[in-house]
Image 1 (cartoon, one colour):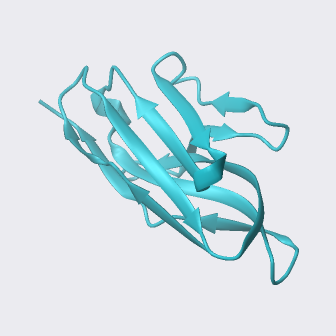
Image 2 (cartoon, rainbow, N blue to C red; image 1 turned 60 degrees about the vertical axis):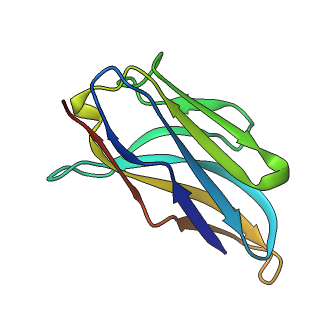
Length: 120
């Protein structure tokens, strides 16, 4: 299983970016899929995720500005980021809990990370 993230870049404060993460491989089922971020010198933190119950969860710092969505047919999750602030600067990682066809067990997977820089 691979998670391929894309869409990062440099944007001015107040701008927008859209991140994408596509899962591929021998996938039986995707239980959860979401986004984390890690800023320099800080721990990795949850940004937004779909829960196993089908709902969504967001970090308080991004509520009202970020929106997570998905395309189940493409095994892809998106993160629309609006009203970006300098403190949103970080490497953004896609994460998923996936049951593979080979093992039929649920395991966690991480994407390679995509850099988001918010600066004027």
